[in-house]
Image (cartoon, rainbow, N blue to C red; front, side):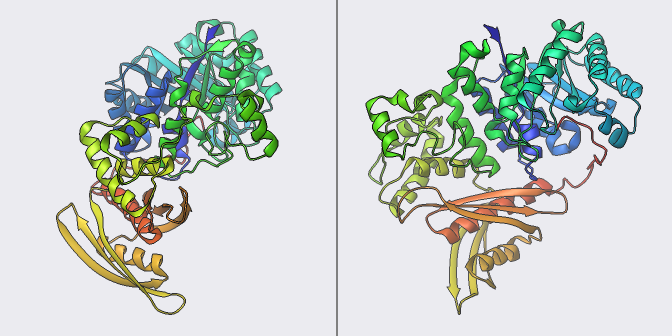
Length: 518
């Protein structure tokens, strides 16, 4: 079987779609887990887009080894220079540069002639080649391009030194048979295509990203690009876990193999969801909570007699253990660590102490601590705000709407500040009290609350999105008290904003004319 290369763009195409900025620690956590999953390439970001993205790509390039680290750039020399600088510490650096190639993009967005587009593309590849040996060229909106023009630009960028060429369905317009035909056409008409890897990158606007990607693979693509949980622009990208497991279940159909450790799929999905604040729908293929549930009596009867009657994938293959250990306040550190390892988490002895302390606090509130609680707990211990810590909350209500909240916050784990505010309900009052203490003036854009475990004492998972003049930030909070969970989420978002924007409001580039592989 031929090798299929897995290119993960969760940290670039996935993150840019969220309307938020993840901090360096969060991006590094995701990069470590994606590397553990076994992908071949991690697209760590777009270094020229902001100082924060540059720093994140730089740190990931220095820290993550054994996998190619890629940075995106437009076909602009300054972009490529910054990309190369950020990737300097990478073991296997790759610069991903390119330009739009469809008539509508060239005429309306770039305002360039086809010959000018080819000239710029060739110059970009040659410039990137000065820094690294591995250069990927993306032909944005390739599916809607003129086929003869696409062949010409791919031929010339390969001659210029590209080692990978990417033909995206940037707006998710293709159907599987059409996208498979495009891959076949490129392989048959680009004379030097055998010298490079042919990559595919699909979007899900019509719900066909996975199907299109599989059609492209069957037609001969060498590399598949996608994101964990399918996050991405508009309706999302190809969900890598879906493609990986489709190939796993039908290897003979596709004739390819990849180096993925499938047992890390569930853990990777959970981590991305926790850090980005984007929940995985219960019915989501492969990683949804209901993916291995059987509610129908007929189905239950069949599965009990023979699992393969209704399960085409063993849950353990993707890292979902069949046995369900329930922990309580009487459980020790060893039992907790064992269960966390079964769920895909690796914790050092020092980390275990912090997690165990939080576990006991939760166990004191609940009779039983379920797997869902542990996932939430691990998400919280990864993202505890250092600048502001919530200490106390007291809420008093009067009438059907008015409420008064008194909040105490520790600043830098030293000074404790208490203030109060009145709001339209307890959550509004708590948020206003936090604003008074922290000086926050960002706009609250989104607030959601959902249950993440079982029983009347189930934990509430609060997610908050706030927007400053410069960026948006996601905060998460988990607690059996939904008011406290909401406060933790809001404070988490405010902390991220303050830490990110303190002294970092300069050197913000204008990318209104940005041309990159969406």
